[in-house]
Length: 439
Ligand SMILES: Cc1ncc(COP(=O)(O)O)c(C=O)c1O
Image 1 (cartoon, protein in one colour):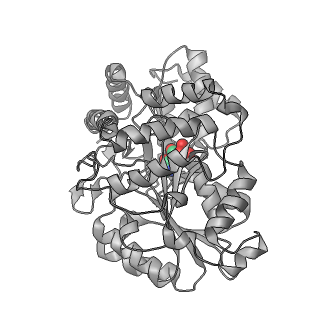
Image 2 (cartoon, protein in one colour):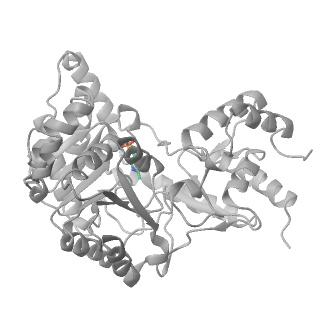
Image 3 (cartoon, protein in one colour):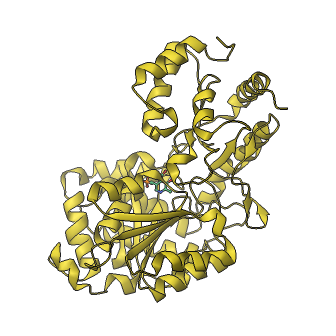
């Protein structure tokens, strides 16, 4: 029996009762449920770092516009699947203002979170050609995306991109493309969980290879503008959020509202289909859809079948948020900067107590401070560390479930940790360090 910040007996019993066979292999939602029960039985608050929930209030202008829309009665009316015109117009303005990318408003679609955007993208794109099999993931990544493919019976390949940065990326991508079985490539940038950010050269490489093999790139921008080493906050001004859209013509951009606008609860995201992809004809789509045109199959096939559109009132919310952002009245980047500031402090608390940052460089620079960071402790695998940390009142997820090859690592999400908890975090990390002295 060890002397740990959370009663040893209680944690052990709760783990046993959870029915989770290996804590390290548990999904994010399973860990959340287990930690909820330990918190309840031990009557102690955890430092919750397992789930990427925004830790900030929802964007006020969105809430007000959504309430107005509800009061006007939109709840009674089915929204058009392709989205309300004002939102589509603001989405096109947003990508022009913040990415310098031109896309027709017609090709900008709301989805039920980026999660649905990803699902609909795999569903449609991986059916464009009968002789292709699925998606290549540039890992580490968000585990649910692979679950989406498994559910549909689609294939995927993946590799940990950390070992193939810079000039090594091109040859590695060619390896996966050579047999012509890949239809789409997905990565998140900034990357969840490692927080690496692709350079312009790397995006150029991805775009060039996608073009060469006629593969669609799905760029997941869930953490839009959050590489705080650059200031992406000014509409219509350099620097712009980097994107593969500058280097290929068949792409989909997934821009979540969950983190950028703290609007996770309303499940609304933006899905931008490039003009070229939208009008591309792929005859094999006819196996599943009434049309062989990608944009039509996407909207009137996949999105219709999945949810028949996105919450009507939430569309008004997002339209209003985007309008104020596009007009330069609301600086959303300034609001989410809080995540980067907290990350810098929290990372120091970890490293001062014997922990190491796992993904610690971005090619030749220290990794940026943002929504996530990754850590390890000498002598522990990530899975062992994750379960040991539960006795210290700290919850996270193992990197092994993200396709990472760094099996010693854990992902920490800074968003839910309040600054008022830093003293507690420090005490718990010190206590871990004392109980696991390093030589
Ligand atoms: C990389 C990545 N993609 C997609 C999502 C899902 O976004 P949404 O809440 O818009 O469905 C998340 C959420 O954590 C994420 O981290």
